[in-house]
Image 1 (cartoon, one colour):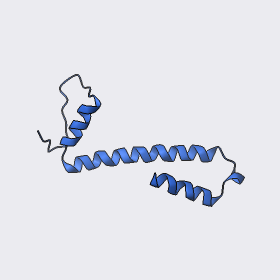
Image 2 (tube, rainbow, N blue to C red):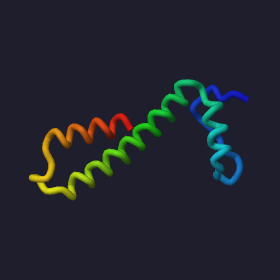
Image 3 (cartoon, rainbow, N blue to C red):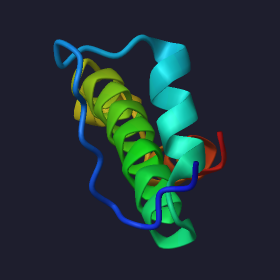
Image 4 (cartoon, helix red, strand yellow):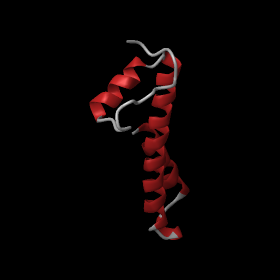
Length: 79
């Protein structure tokens, strides 16, 4: 069964376990899978940047340089 649309109808009780969700994602057309991947990547990046901001917030202005900030941003982006 191949889903050629980005619309999925759930007929059970509206709940999916992880295996069912992954199976549905694999059946989506390529543009829809790309969209799912982008959302996951954005969510992960938001989480990493949020943690970075929190770490930076805990330091005083004199404790961290612009170079430190740039290094941390590069590290988060490539993690």
